[in-house]
Length: 151
Image (tube, rainbow, N blue to C red):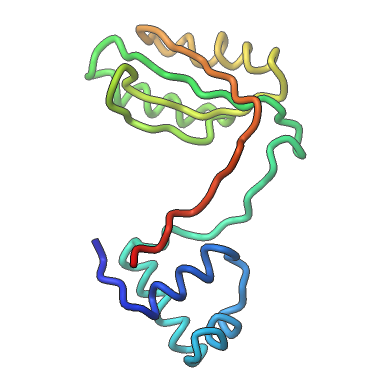
């Protein structure tokens, strides 16, 4: 775990709320120079504290109205690398997690609608030679947030 001082925490708090905020605005709020903010952010990127910045698309506004989670049971543990590589080739899958408990893997995906979701499951996921899957459809993302900055 990286050591974060109070300025690092303040910077992270600001940019986690708005990744598009100008460095000069962050500098003004933190009462330091723009160069200091730039150096701190670069250091936090190099340390792996900041994984990147991105524009977040609203799936339903670009035609993907069905969000689902699929729990994947592998036939055997040695299938993991093969299945992971094949899952990465399915563009509708936006997240993949290795898990404990019942599932070996857990993926989040988007379909245009329920019929498209069924096509993804039948034509793209079922052929991966898995033991079985369980699908959960999300009605609505109640909330999503960044991690809190540790005190």
